[in-house]
Image (cartoon, rainbow, N blue to C red; front, side, top):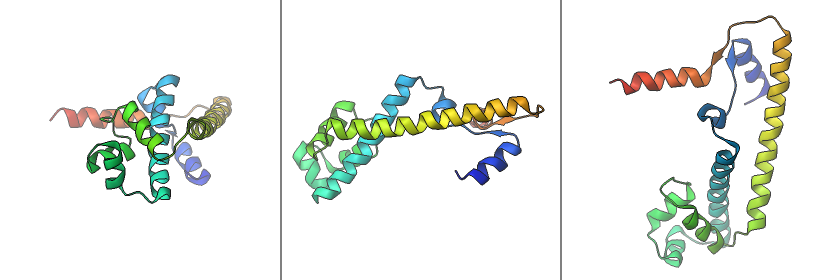
Length: 147
């Protein structure tokens, strides 16, 4: 989100957060989700670099092509074992994964630090009513679930 849009939303009383905050994920859960995302993303990139089709990778792993689609999308139905096996099959290494996850986590830490600084600055300003995106979405989900 660009700074201009963020400022406008915050001025309107919205609190900006990420999915981890919305779902209340622990640091360990955040790491697991990020590892899944990075594995899936890198797997697809490496497969394409190798010139492998999804079908060819599926044959190599002994699964059907639709399973590769699920693996490349980090679907929750896919075990970490299967995700890691596919990742290694296309040339992925632990070092590559560690580097990308560390980069993403460092970016998240920087964003959390900036958010804490914004909150400290806002705490010094006169109080105004804020709206939380997560609360609004939660109410929408509750309404949808009552049908």
